[in-house]
Image 1 (cartoon, one colour):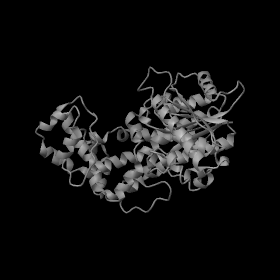
Image 2 (cartoon, rainbow, N blue to C red):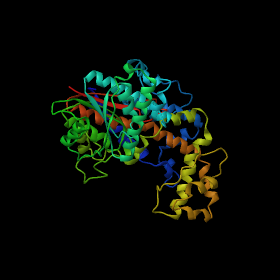
Image 3 (tube, rainbow, N blue to C red):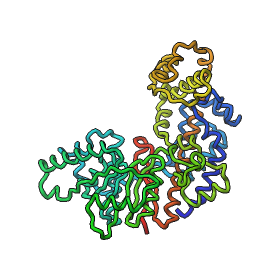
Image 4 (tube, rainbow, N blue to C red):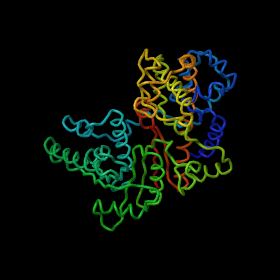
Length: 464
């Protein structure tokens, strides 16, 4: 990671050049005539392209670029190549599965259901892979236990504790979730005594569940003391790892600061999410500590170039499912691609009637083939503050004119998605530099299938 400062500087320059694109909401496409903001050369060439070829702009980073079937604007071709050199890969390494320790209990005919009870496929994929990576970290650092932040009902901790035999202290702010977790633990133990031999359960470690909220004001000494009490640890020294599966917004930054400020913390593994919820100097200038930027390197750069920031809109697009949209483009799922056009047409109606209510939340409507705009609009505003618009006479000519350009809006959205991995990479580069500046060994890599779990990068750190 020796070239991180240089990569970060170049990445910020690219974001600055295309911030007009990153900062444009697709829902405003018709209201603000976003198509006119594209360079004229882009407009003339992109207008002629069939929708399915747009997938080339989102081509995966796991192979060489395939020969293009169309003529792209030269600037777009150059941008695509630059992004491939700057972006952190979103494709998990093939050998990762082989390198990670296995957990036979997850395949036990009678018990595997207890580990995955009421767990959706996305969460199942995440907790199995995350548990294996954390188990490997425990082996590498000889820690006594791990602390799982935002543990919920303890699915990840259960695999670690009963599957891998690792002590886990779960921190969850909602008491009801902790109560559910304790009940599931007890049920699992009861079933294990019924279906397993004594030697098969001797490695079991029951998780400790604490109701505690972590914030930027949490004192390391208070945190350490709560852990000591949870495990009834003596006053002697102990070592632990910190883990977090998708801590939201600023919680990722809080975990990093806590990790650095606790001498006993030896490793950190977390997968972030909800970048748009991070605090910044622009959004919360009154705060002392922000979620972005973190590293001294980036703070210096932003101090010299204060206009080079990651806006809310840029951080929000970085959380979208890029690979899923790629699949829809290549599978000719045109009817489903039209949903953005319907939402943008609805936004024009809302802004016309309520100019101060831009970007208000509407109901999610699952698009179906043949759905008319009137049907979509009625469902979208049902139960919202705009429900009165159901009786309003709509400007059908304007709506028809807007919806004729649905391919333009697909193209515009694809261009924004093309830049999304760069925004995420900047955030991850900043986090890596923040940890490196404190002397840690740092690694960032994709560990989840991005089609299942779009936020799929783990930030791992070990104290030297």
